[in-house]
Image 1 (cartoon, rainbow over the protein chains, first blue to last red):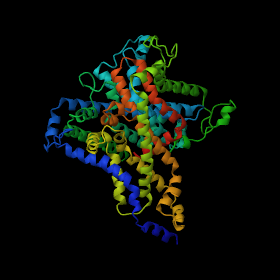
Image 2 (image 1 turned 90 degrees about the vertical axis):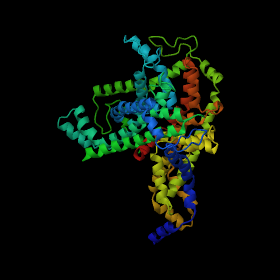
Image 3 (image 1 turned 30 degrees about the horizontal axis):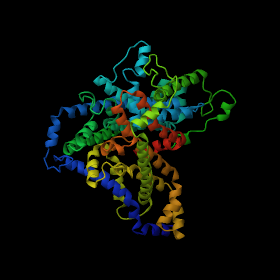
Image 4 (image 1 turned 60 degrees about the horizontal axis):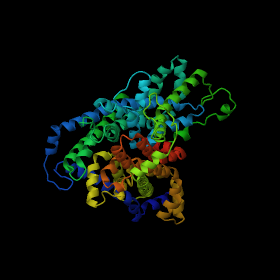
Length: 297
Length: 301
């Protein structure tokens, strides 16, 4: 009786199922999948915003090889991954351990640590531009304790480092929550057994917590490395739209935005750079996941 | 997935009785450890919330007060709303706020309706091509927005929707991840209730609207909140698609304000406070769903 009802429900093929899915499918098709195909096609043309363009083969990619700005962008985006990912894998984990115990007021601290995640990246960027200013709070504190003022926003490398610090600062709370959810599943018995064996807090962290959270750490590494390679807003706001005075802080996505938009935008060339962004992003994801599997075996 | 919901309840009575503080398993926490924890918590609190308060403090300092002093003065000597008035004299900040509100509201409505419908179709309805439809959303979720943003821009131009708020909303109007979140939520509902409704003669629409949808309100709230936050905070896409200053959203307007009046820190500070305040209020009221969304999103992502 029950099974026949199920199969009757399943067997009916009215038009409405498609009507249900249509809005989502149309939006996804027109604004995600079509632009993706169009990016691939455009990468092999000399299309500009106002000029349809013609097929040029690999010319865009050959130009990339000789474009200093492209290599600067690739270098900065890669450095961003190297700088940001270790910090975002480790610091939020320590933070999660700090807020894990239900001591009085802990809910307040958890929420407070999450506020940078909620704020817009533009707000966060501008707050830090002011904090790191030559005459800003960080420098007046540094001067007060006798270190002296640091030109965070004038040196090419300090600019990039400052942007990384902002990315880490904004991401802490997000990954903290991911770790908190995972920590709730670490069996307490493991900790107790290790404690009985005389392991101290640091040793228990390394031998119990880290192995138990390994897959979560891989997830965080994957999420944060993909996000770091695609960095745009932080650097755009802190180093300026040109990526520093001579553009030496430009990231790949900044280059895409600068090259491909506006009425004179070189859509074809920007699409070639976009494809590089796409390929590296997917490669990063696969790399992290493969590293995970190798460790497992 | 909510951390807040999942965490074991704190032993509140022990706190009230001013007895020793215990952890979630009823064990005593040593005093020195407790002190150390609070010291660290306050340190991180200063690092995470401090910058926002410094921005608020800067925005309340009058034109005669030194904002560059060393050592810094954390509280405004004579708090004033003068800078907020100046922001609205300098840029049409309330129009920008209204534009942001329109975009965010539209984004919430389209995402809730679109992803609930599509999620239901993927989870519950049987039709040819369902697997393909699911695959379409999974593939769309894997494509990084930044890598197709130029083509999205040319697509908008082809549709004549560039430089319009509709153009800002459309690409993210039914997020693939939201569709998959809703699909999972519907899949987790017991099939028997809908089966009973079917026997009682309820059609597809009635089963969706009266039975399935009310049971996934929590996930729908997560979708709504993240849609709002995402579009209120979004920067790159509106920066590319909007060129007419009268159509700017708050984030683009702030970027413009900073670009033009970078040396007027009080002004920029007031602008950022205006942009961030609504979200902070929203977060304070609906924290549960913010945290829950992180858990569900991470599992999916």
